[in-house]
Image (cartoon, rainbow, N blue to C red; front, top):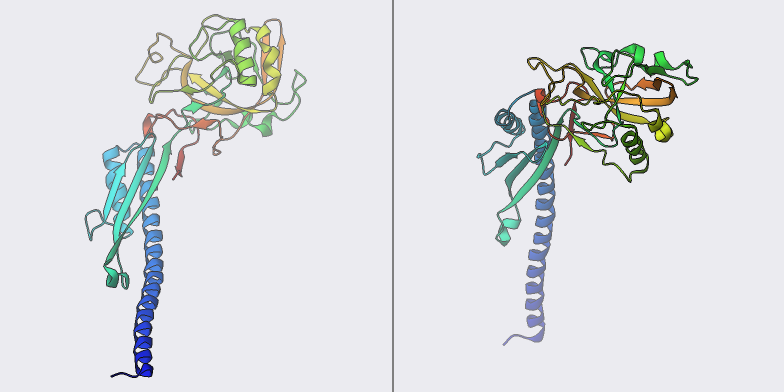
Length: 335
């Protein structure tokens, strides 16, 4: 028969053994957890690089099938080959993005003792690519493609450095205007647009009021990929009465549609018989003032250089070579 002291000694041993098991389990969780975090970080890096590589492929005119191959190849280069060692690399195309999901098992060292030999680790990355084809709060006037070089950048004579002096209107900035046409007649002319609607003074007035107050006009325009719709006005005139709300955009950067002749092999604007005033892309214009007198109406200011992504411009429908020719290419992680 065990003495009381012997029984207490046996209980201490049992408690000690159980404590050791708990301590080992906790240490194991810490070690395995840290290892999982390291694997997750590596997987995330691989997913990010794969998504950016696929998005870059789309930006350069590759198909989604080709972009998928490129994205999975980059993931493999970074240690995660689809179908190898339990890894999955899935590439999908939500609206305007490429999404890469990587899943892979983590081999546990201690947690297997408790019936968990592996943990599944999953990460995702999404990248956006394209050229801006949509503007929110776009200006109600169009400007000519002849203000830009073959690289899609504004000519230096229309940038701030060349347009900073006071002009004949009494404002700083270069001057656009004078010809009462449906589309810009030359490189220093402009024309109203309501994006396909007939232009008259009251609608120009309403558009500017809506632009400035946000209460009248929906200024978000979506351009189908690869199209060049006609955006010139359909009745000539500078509609001087429409300028009364123009003060609200003086001193601001506004998205402006750039127009010109149709892109070859087309000979007219998309779904139109017009041979000029076709949409060519978006540019940002800094408005320094406006002037209206008689048959002459001017917008004063300068174009902003490319290479900056402005909040009012976004990628919606275009991919790669089907995008409009103007606007900074967008390539960035969004998730």
